[in-house]
Image (cartoon, rainbow, N blue to C red):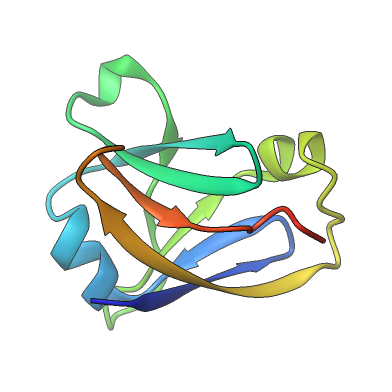
Length: 102
């Protein structure tokens, strides 16, 4: 299944469908840059750290406020991106290929 996430205002937006399919019941994710790819990895125990998956609206969409991460990757606060993502079993993450080829 191919889906899309949005980066806007240095935050990552996930639809309810994406959250329920890949991160259901979880409160945090880890964001990693691997070459030019963005990896969104589930964190099974919130004590392990990561970014909070905050409830955005009554529809169940989520937002991850990660300005520090995106700024460190050279993504400006006013940047708005729609990124195609796919689940990678090998990486154990939702992957947005070439996300940082700005």
